[in-house]
Image (cartoon, rainbow, N blue to C red; front, top):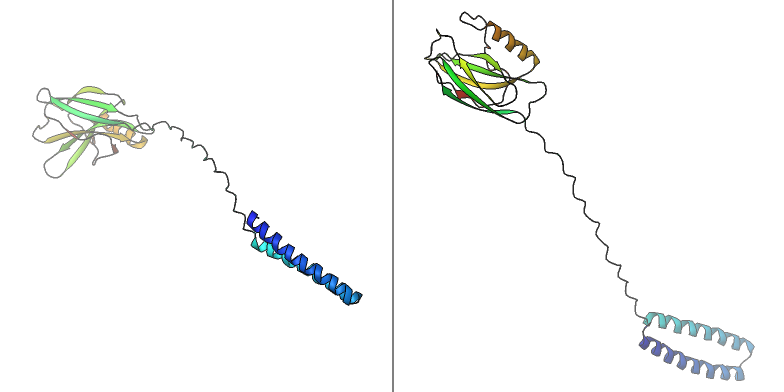
Length: 206
């Protein structure tokens, strides 16, 4: 309660007390005991009314401000190990003699489990048909090698090379086809591109 409200309440209470005291002596002198008792009850109600007025006049206590909350310290995410990149080759080629090409394969990344990598020679016969000859198994590292075609092979057809990742069954096929290759090779190629390409195609300048 503010000091102004206290002063106002005290003044009102004093006035009412004086009036009630004067009335009490008057009633005591001129009335019987029942009137006195009724008057006493009225006095009690009067003080109760004064108390209610005082409470109504008291200003509401302002809400106490809650202390500012301290933000929880942020936790930096744990650094995760970088995921290794899958194996990929960059191919280039340079001519050797009329039937030999030098191929350079630059590797980056890690071999994918379950795959075996092969350099496959693609021969485009010019009629919309191409055959795919597995010629060399790769190790997953950078390397250079000579790629030779038979002496009687026709060099007018376009030949390209690409590296593929082969699964276990495809790898077994590639090993069998490689054994069949030669001057009179029979069933020594894939009819279509097989496996997962892991390099761009490089032109082979025979």
